[in-house]
Length: 132
Image 1 (cartoon, rainbow, N blue to C red):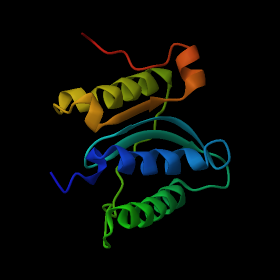
Image 2 (image 1 turned 135 degrees about the vertical axis):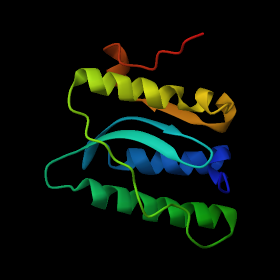
Image 3 (image 1 turned 180 degrees about the vertical axis):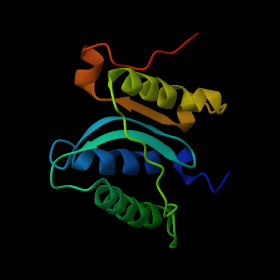
Image 4 (image 1 turned 60 degrees about the horizontal axis):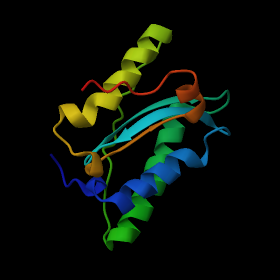
């Protein structure tokens, strides 16, 4: 559904860079998966930084950069974000695995999506578990 501009590796790179830009300053970025027409992420805002403002800022920045890259203008992201509060480690694990499996469940090839998990999470065994 949608235009699927995130299918392009260079466009996904813009999103990846924007998400990682304030990691460790405004928030802890745990994981993300960039799909052809949307993304999933795990993010924990630090005190003094509202999730809504962080997402608004990242959407604004990526919209501008992606539109410049593609030589176009206009809206890129939906205004609404569908956020959930992760309440415990078990829930976090389920969310991490859900977003990691999302491309495969949607029938999307690996080269049309980008998956990332915070490296120190991976060292602790908190990576994506891909079923064969």
